[in-house]
Length: 131
Image (cartoon, rainbow, N blue to C red):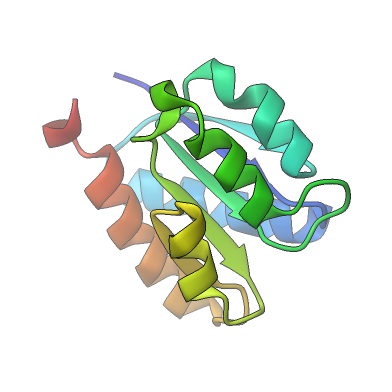
């Protein structure tokens, strides 16, 4: 079954960087997914109705930041179980978890480190055992 992933980041270059790494890891895991994009926290709030299997969102964005977007999504009972990972240069892991995020990824990690993190996250959250 094809999965649905949402990536939200106001920096188009980082969004594309993360998307490339997610696609590479999906290939390594032999998983298929449609990847959708958003450019600020309000996009996350609007697009959540598309029933994504996993969401990656930046923390610092215009209009609505990632922490606030996660709080808004988690306030809706139907979406409490969707894995949401906040991606940030800031060390906000505790704030992310408190807001309801499933986890945190440090944007400053080099390619191999982020690939390892993404591989483990995608394997955990999207593997067949979770269907």
